[in-house]
Length: 462
Ligand code: GLY
Ligand code: MN
Ligand code: MN
Image (cartoon, rainbow, N blue to C red; front, side, top):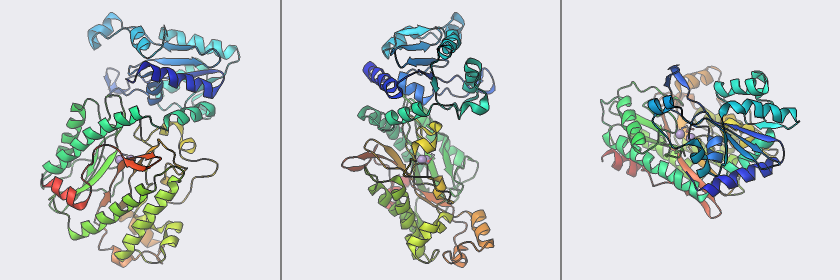
């Protein structure tokens, strides 16, 4: 938890920015996996966490913009709770530690919201993403599910983004704790990987280190020999001599700050010359893109820079041909790089994605593209000091996509489909780091994790 003053200031700022009405922040409840008492790991809502620091289920906060009143709704533990969950500090004490003096029973929330509504106050709420909170919005405010998104408060969304987007030095310290745990996860899987092991064995080693670090995973592990499948959560393959492993993993710190790192490494500890060629292109693209992560530069520019470096690299391998600017402008390179360069990261691995990417990543001057590849860029607008962005270019050979484009002769003026046949089973490479935008330039946060070809090979060989 940060100090009391941090939370008091965050709440004052949000009330000032929204100006009037009542702000409702709903915490998360346990979410059942297959029956009520068998729940997924509890994860507090990040907005609730940002303004309260309280990592407990079944809480809600109201902030009254004109009076400055802040009320926490939640229940003290019953004897049943103490028996089954263990005794905790009184809720009123935990609230006082984050500067909240007023605590009321949870079942008083509905009446308080209805009273505010009846007196003509606007109730500002954020886009709900969990079924439980959608039901509550319907029960307490009568807002039908299908209208809940459009009736969220744009004023509140913009105000939350304006606070959460620039990370404080204390938040960077938390993210660096998550990154230190993540480094240990990578060193372990690189060292222990051997031909004949299952992907699941390595994923299990990494998950264990995240738990031992005091938090959990920030998102489910991707660890696969089929790195060309972008969100591949299968772990059942046996790793063979000559395969590459693409691992996209990040721990969450005890305070829930996320790390998001990707490394690609050879199962047998040595990259083949074909693997080196692709790996070096991706690394060059990542380094060139990171260099542009500076205040005042649009993230779109960094994405396009990475795209151009990848295009140049593929031209040197005779897989693409033609004018680099034209290839990138038309999106032919997206056959090999079909996702965006990166996203904001903080309390959420895709920070504040619940608030809507059109608020978070785009603005009046930067509208979202509909082009394949570029449309998946989650943030295109100008970077500011304090933003933390992932930088994660990748290069993939996706057989189904190659076949589809070839059948349609798509971009045949740029794609050397005959040469591409030699690469179609290559899989994929992605390299990802978390980068703080500072007045002095980009800073990769956290301890260095093996990244160059030499460093990765050395880590694999222990
Ligand atoms: N780990 C999810 C992502 O890289 O965006
Ligand atoms: Mn990732
Ligand atoms: Mn990422």
